[in-house]
Image 1 (cartoon, rainbow, N blue to C red):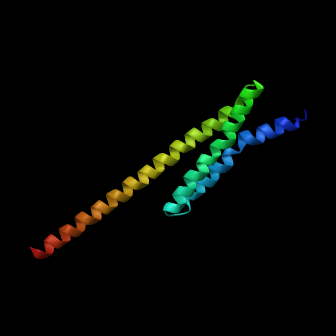
Image 2: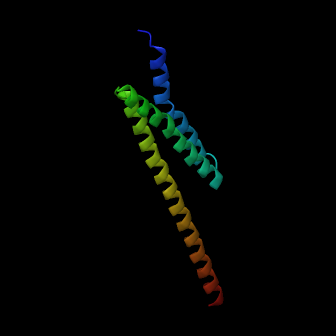
Image 3: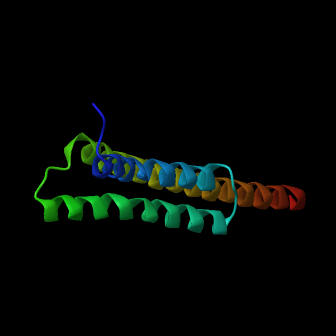
Length: 114
């Protein structure tokens, strides 16, 4: 069965958040720096636009979003949580390393004077 043009566009728009999630993942994990994190969050936020647009379109047409809508929003929520947790863990580990280095250096200084 051949899909109508409207159905093909709908399927592509429901699937498009995966592209934004992939780009955000690359920004968070491959690129380094605060600019990369900002770009990652911006790309992640842009991933919500087609999904929300299709949800509004389905409401106007009085149609159910179907499986594509559920998968789209589930991906966005799941990866948003993963991105947030991974960045929070990285910040916590970095802060812990900085504290360990400070305490080691202060212990070295005290040992040198004793």
